[in-house]
Length: 182
Image (cartoon, rainbow, N blue to C red; front, side, top):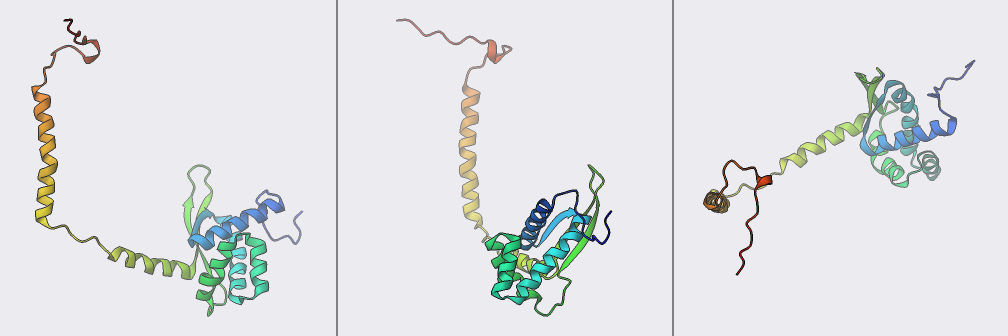
């Protein structure tokens, strides 16, 4: 019986479960959002929010505790340097779960779990990147480039038309021209 046991095990051993949530937390910190099943997203929320709270603390012991769980130095650095400062004024609720429906293969309910502020920052950064466009080519250069590319195509077509063809005989059965003997 499961008296007083509140966490789901997903039919895994404790070490596998810890590893799974550690990897999912790393992915969430790196990408800002991940797609997973709804029960996993709900369980992951606890771990991700604890790690962000440690990041807000910013002390050496908090960094060591986060490193002990996440096992990825680059991800922990990103968590403490970039993500946690966004949530200084927020008291929890750092993640959002959006339900997607069911997976076609096994009918499992799917969700997206994402960082609340991280999505806003990523959305603001994308339009800035799209604003830069390549300069337009002058029309004169484009016309000469087009004419230059058409010239070799015309020469190939002329050579093809001038080559003798054996009508009605498939290529595979054609005999090669025998070399002339002197």
